[in-house]
Image: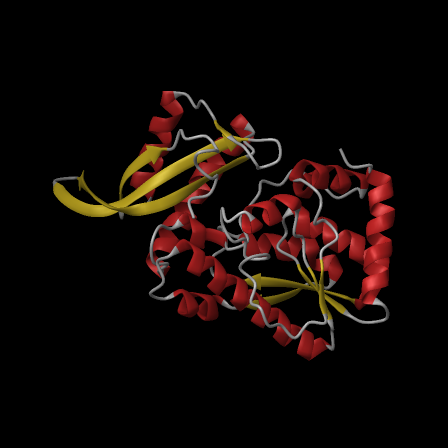
Amino acid sequence: MVQTERFIREAIGEIQSEAGTHHVVIALSGGVDSSVCAALAARAIGDRLIPIYVDTGLMRKRETERIAQMFGYLNLHIVHAEEEFLSALSGIVDPEQKRKVIGERFIRVFEREATRTGARYLLQGTIYPDRIESEGGIKSHHNVGGMPLHMQFAKVIEPLRDLYKDEVREVAGALALPPEIQHRMPFPGPGLAVRVIGEVTREKIDVVREANAIVEEELVDLYLPWQCFAAVLGLGTGVKGDNRIHGWIVAVRAVNSRDGMTADPLEIPYDMLAHLASRITAEIPSVARVVYDITPKPPATIEYE
């Protein structure tokens, strides 16, 4: 495990050395990785840190409002870029291409903010598993393999690049970040786009957002999973009332893990699974069926794309 206090001192020193006297844009999503980065950078460079949260339109239900409340003290700037991201994803079905498109859009937004504020550097919460999976060809994380080759930033600063998720949580505790942040469930950088199989459309995002909210509401406090969520797999037939429908198939995924490199599915009682299926199909009229994914990682990944 990381020597926490030593790591904090070295990370603050690294940020100070890399940034010099310049302003730094930080990609702040509200997850534990970017939150730890923000806390370290605030100590290192003070008000030369420019926190940016990008609402891509691919966020969880009420996510933007929640992040605004949690990080308002940092003078957080929220960029509403839903149309930009959904337009860029139109017609794209390949998972790797999706990730690269999203990664590039993020960088272009941060570049615009850097131009507006005079920042020269980008700070982001890349951690070791992101690098392993991107460099190993498992999948391109939007903040590693999904980033464009050409950027206007002088450098990207990544102080957490050698840490695993559980080590980042240790650092969060040492920095006295709120438990809600320290133990926050991972959420992918590309957002709900990687919980939609095939082309990302507004309808699919609306469905997966509502289904995801139901899954988190029912499972998080009761089972304390490492991660739980819903995904839209495609269309299937069903019956609602006296009518045959062609509706969405939603998968529920709930796993436990230590560092995200391996994961085991939760053994959720059948009664709870039936309750989830009942809520999702009743509250989202366009959903025809619900399935539960029992595949560990490996051979599966935690997310669907």
